[in-house]
Length: 195
Image (cartoon, rainbow, N blue to C red):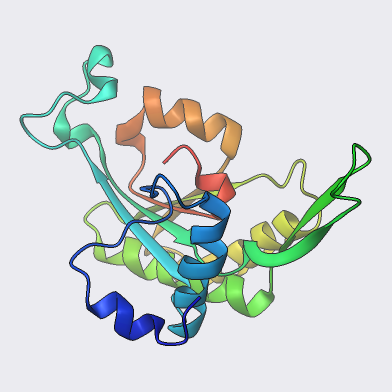
């Protein structure tokens, strides 16, 4: 990445990366050499994604007779830890014996700040409801800490914000079948993939 990358970004009207992509830049290059350095330099630990059915558009859930008011979410994704920690590597990458590892890293401090942000967002919304997405049934260390810290922060919002927990697999079904049952959603990058 160029040393003057911030100045270079300011010169362009549009930037293509990540989910949008650019045809001749591999996804892992745009993420690890552009997006993540920007997030880390600017301490952008939250990815906020409002999700709505816009009036006049045909939504994928339209076949289920869902109305625009049925889907009005704010998805809060952890933007700097977990799967974005950058830990892991490839051994014997030149052969069929290649071994690649990815290590998701969660810190108490990082989890506490993302959950506090999510609860504060939910507190400002009319429904005052927060759904936490997890995969703690399979990821028995990082996601178990994820759940633990969520419930510790939740105690501070008792009686203010209603909250629940969903495994990512079940969350996918709930998003399609009962979008009106959710308001604010907090997840890691990978456990928010239905978004």
